[in-house]
Length: 99
Figure 1 (spheres, one colour):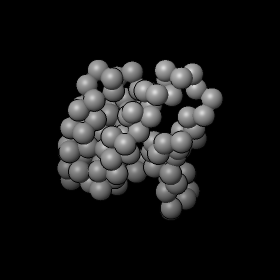
Figure 2 (cartoon, rainbow, N blue to C red; figure 1 turned 60 degrees about the vertical axis):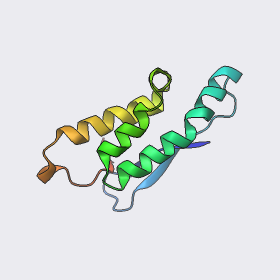
Figure 3 (cartoon, rainbow, N blue to C red; figure 1 turned 180 degrees about the vertical axis):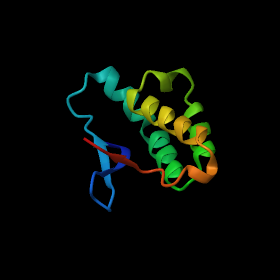
Figure 4 (cartoon, rainbow, N blue to C red; figure 1 turned 90 degrees about the vertical axis):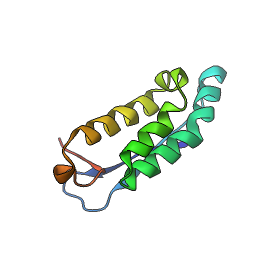
C-alpha cells in the first residue's frame, strides 16, 4: 500500500487518510509505484504541513516518471491549484469532499 491523500468527508471534522493498494498490479506498474512511494508520501506530508511549494518541488524531482503515476500527478495538480489561490484565502490544504 501507499499513502496517497488526506481528505475530509462532507459534514465531518476529522480528515481521513487515503491509501492505494498495490497488490495485484502487474510487475512493471507495481515496481514503478513502489519507486515513487517514498517521494509521494514525503511530498504529501510536506503539502499538508503547509509547505506547498516545497512539496511541488519534491514531486518534480521524479521528472517524467512522475507523470506516469496517476496518484502523484493528482497530488501535483492539487498542489498547483492550492498555490494558485491567494495566500489569504488558501485555508486548510485538506480537501473536503462533497456530493
